[in-house]
Length: 246
Ligand code: ADE
Image (tube, rainbow, N blue to C red; front, side):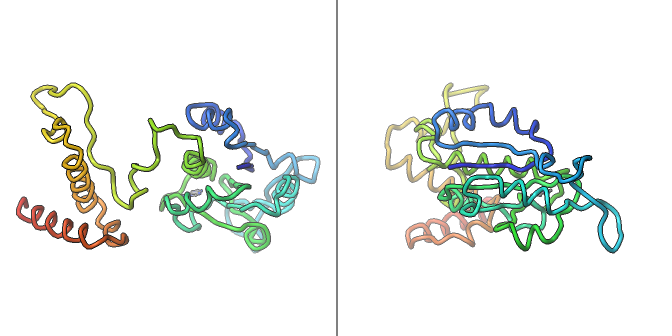
């Protein structure tokens, strides 16, 4: 996968791209990630990237030329998903990450302070994504979130140690509680079943805890998920147990 990130603040990406799994993913050639300062594509000598809005009003608007020219300088940009990071975008989810991981070319557009000239949306961008209902100072942090969550899904990036398959959301449910040594800490004991060595019982316990946690914290996920008959029965039982607890 080839990723290009258009930003006025490429230095914001340095730490993220040079650390941990994103760094390793680039070293393993699972992905190339480049930042492009679209100010380099400004057309006047002052390198202006924004201007006052037609019709008046507060704030500045990012001009179309630097962004179009920067995108058009990227090899194979015609084949790329061109993703604008904006709070007006569709809400980003794990499902979208699974979709984007199949692409060969991704281009991210990050605005800062300003809005984008509408012609960028209409004639360049293929996707608009929001990472949540809050407003950041710019699209950079949002682009990092999307890049991070897509790259970790690429083949060969995560080892077994960090497997993506048992993550929260990959099954549509939140992850079950995990424990490690010691067996007892300040009188707090690890659940007996996890020490039993009984694999089937452990799987059942984990499934149940996973559903319980999701029911309590994110009932919206349960509603959205398709369960088989056995799991539906389990959900009913857990709901009954939770009602008795309250
Ligand atoms: N830019 C500013 N806020 C944002 C958000 N919540 N998601 C994506 N891009 C943004």
